[in-house]
Image 1: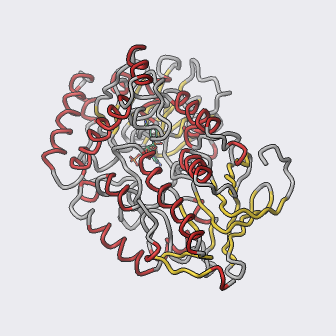
Image 2: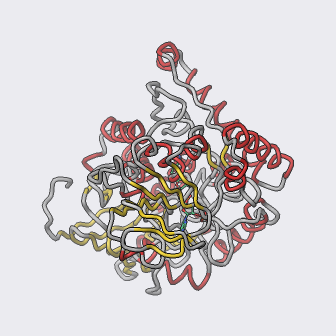
Length: 498
Ligand code: NAP
């Protein structure tokens, strides 16, 4: 399939997965392992990797230790550092796809443009840039970090210099010796600034909200350690388990236990004090909300980069972008040769929600607009039979590995596929009352948490102020909840009815 030309095809498969990042790939491997080989993965890019293929900006690296940021079934004893860089992670993903022999299941360069539930045929009709597919079961593994969010700043379209989003880095644009503006100081922005600062003439860092930044406790694995991981049975798993347990402690810091939040804030302030001697700059980078309210960041080189002579932190806000300059809210106009938009992703209003139309003809966007972004166990939505979403609402973990969440969901979705086969089910659709009860209980867990009371806005919240992104509990509870497919929460129809 992957070598096909741009011809219109109609092909029916049992399971159709959209997106070939960590989630789509992991699911493909599991389906193959459990003997479900009638599936395809549609991938709009030309390689596996998803967000790790796309985010090639200078300095791109992971905030979660590599030992944990990898599939449990494909540990990698060759990681060279405790936190891996984007090229290392992308190599790992490619290698796993090869080793598990699923690449031939991928249709690359295939963008899904629409998907409609056909109730009579009880299948999904999926329109793509390479033709039409039908599938008994549709799984969206497009991921929350796939759709760049472009800021709506006055005059931005009139800008005449280089301008691109961090997730669409233009490697043809030579920034050497140029004046570069970086808009946004989230996880991407604070990695880009120190990476480009030594190469460019000037970096103007436009910060809207100061992030909390903790130390990146990093470690280079020696050859001896790597050999030990490879040859001592269980050692790497033990290290992984210890890292996992340690990360779980962050849940405590982010929920209602403010002494833990205060401890992390103290560490962050000491770091700020040690790395920034200028009190005015220190004031600018000091957050005015509680740590954990937004995703906390880790870096050892961001603050030092801000103290460089060629880096300026601008916190007055942006009034306007002109053909060759940016005007701050205080009226200061600064000329700029290139603008990097490190402004994040469309998570609560992802354009992928427009693509799926359920059984009453409404799109996911329309349903979410009317009823709020409610997903059952981060995986299914009432009104959308035989459809699953990977890393759906309230499944993100801001403190530990997304791969852990993904593998939890793989258990659930793969078991759903197996259960449907075993019980002879034609359709499964989560019951609206089950979805409502689940979300009510879930939202109660946020009451009093730092995410809602910490005094910030973040991409965790939708326009109603509801936390639609995070799983508010220990990740092992999410794993336990998704261990098996709970068919009792679903309306089902038998195959014979067809
Ligand atoms: P982000 O965390 O959403 O940060 C976006 C930044 O852009 C924020 O500072 C935001 O300010 C600012 N911004 C947005 N719109 C703006 C506007 N109109 N004017 C001025 N500033 C604006 O996005 P991200 O840094 O790309 O990270 C997204 C997620 O990707 C992370 O949370 C993480 O899950 C993942 N990620 C991880 C890593 C890693 O592991 N190291 C690296 C990169 C990304 P406000 O805070 O005021 O909204």
